[in-house]
Length: 263
Picture 1 (cartoon, helix red, strand yellow):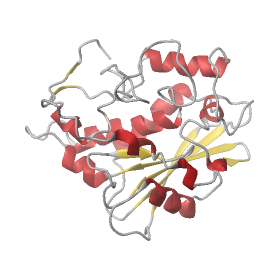
Picture 2 (spheres, helix red, strand yellow):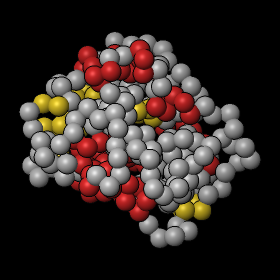
Picture 3 (tube, helix red, strand yellow):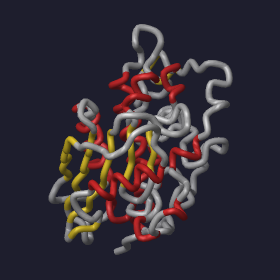
Picture 4 (tube, one colour):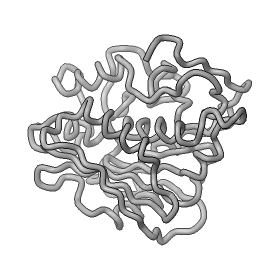
């Protein structure tokens, strides 16, 4: 992405009231450690030593299917960084979630593990999962959440609410594109979730996020305030620092921890 391609116009203190702790579903003590934390299957994705293929299982409420542009973009971004010689497949399943009201991180995990078609580590295939349910997260302004090593959720109702106020720019589809890649970036361990980068590119005020507005891991991407970005292109790809971190993790030059699988 060309430098300065993203021109950001944010309302004063637009993010001051948004609590991003929910973006990582941080109540990890409430579920089995074997399910891992976001980034816990980073090496399993980056390497082809054991897992030579990957399935992205997307379970969605009726009327809440992801945009095809979002799933196509996600596949491309994962193919760019994950060594899967037997391919990456997107599997869409309409689902009736047994849930009403707002969603907590625990709710997402419970529903996800009830709906999973396969264990995340199944033979030579790595399974990751995204939920697209009706409803919103318990914390205002959160568009997506990574809740464990293999699971994320996208709240399309909140994405729709976040679209731009001026001529619908950015559109809900554009926002969904970026948020979906962003949350899977957290499953890849970005930024500094399961490692310490040799480059200082983590936003100090928003841990786990990039300080570069041209990275899809930029801190504002998963916030409802993303709709205030009214010109330029929303970031939808990993920047060079992100890519270098992933390369370093794969090579072993950057130590990774809390991994559910290692070569």
